[in-house]
Amino acid sequence: MIQGVHVKKLKIIPDDRGRLMEIMRSDDPFFKKFGQVYMTTAKPGVVKAWHYHKKQDDHFTCISGKMKLALYDARPDSPTYKEVNDFVVSLEDPMLIVIPKEVYHGFKCVSDVEAVVINTPTETYDPKNPDEYRLDAFDNEIPYDWRR
Image (cartoon, rainbow, N blue to C red):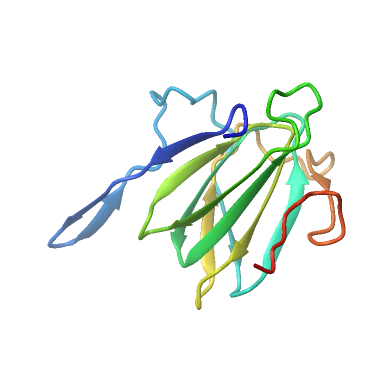
């Protein structure tokens, strides 16, 4: 596992009215602070990658459809430098993935329906000075093949 990445298995609690799933709590051992919560989606087969942040950690989960989330550790001083992790996240296998700052990440919708992803970053988005550093999804030095 890439240093600083945490995986929290989530539990869906059904009853006769529907379902409930806690995603993140302020007493989780990895919780640092709250920045904002947002939703992003990808249509079937679409890749949204690669980027990293210098200031914020991300906390990703998928609440509809299915996403393949990939991480790449490009931090030269990390003991897991150049390591790749990937996860398939959906309501069938619900989990929250904590992505530390400076770790490249991206996701692909691997379901027949749009993947709906919730992120709770530790910082708020600043459109005048975005904390996002991007690479092309396919043309880069990251040893990951989104086509498989």
